[in-house]
Amino acid sequence: MLITPAYAQGAGGAEQGLLGFLPIILMFGLLYFLMIRPQMKRAKEQRQMIESLQKGDEVVAAGGLIGKISKLGESYVTLEIAPNTEVNVQKASVQTLLPKGTIKSI
Image 1 (tube, rainbow, N blue to C red):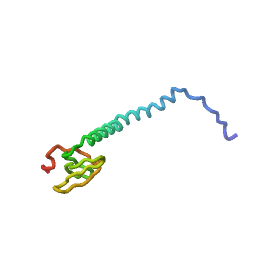
Image 2: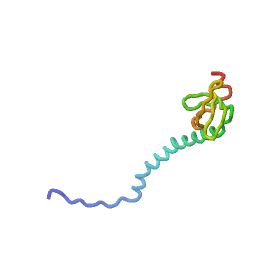
Image 3: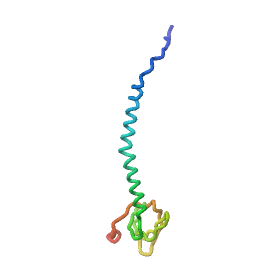
């Protein structure tokens, strides 16, 4: 006979299965503390900054647009980027709150 019959091996213990998942569990924990948690913290800080915007604040919007807030709406902000020049941007596009007087120093 050229082919020998194959027999099933005995089942491994539950201990071996748990040890097989241990590296995956450790990698997920590491991923959470190095990537997910800091990203959630940054998102929370950004949300708080957007909620605390007031008229007269100097901000940087997406794309590098710098201006002073002249009007606040529900989901839009009107920025004065030059004298008598205003643009509307979404609140979510505001990226950074600048210290007062930054625009004059530029």
